[in-house]
Image 1: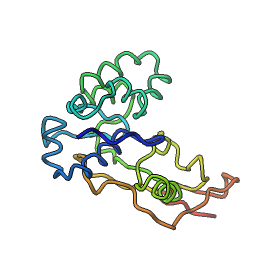
Image 2: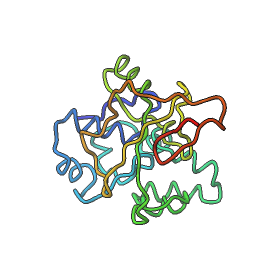
Image 3: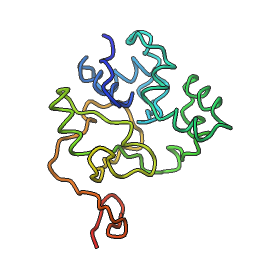
Length: 195
């Protein structure tokens, strides 16, 4: 079965989660079929190692990397490493691509988080019938939704991240609006506190 069509601003990781749900495959089997091993780790915004794209998509891999990951952002801001970033993603060397993007690796015990905007989730479900992870919410250092001006909620991921059908954002009416006065808000861990 082909991958579901990409939704506006959707991460490739999110598309793979939706694919796993649609075909009804267990996580272990999905990882083995599409990544070559149930032990592979998959990063949400620099997804590589997807060996099954040829049998499940008519898109070329370059187009997927260009349009559904944050690789173009790192390539633009790190021109010295742009060719190496692309090369390592094409070869499926996520750890090396991470180093060239100057991001901590999984082994550094840095928490991997998925971010979502509560209002975007509700709008996505109303418009597309499903929630999904947006690229714009995963730009490092951005903690507010550009469309709605509210703080993003986060979901901490397990150390070995795989494609799991339970990993789509959940709808919630709880949200905190970002203030126009940056001095009135303090970010602490994953929550915002108003002074």
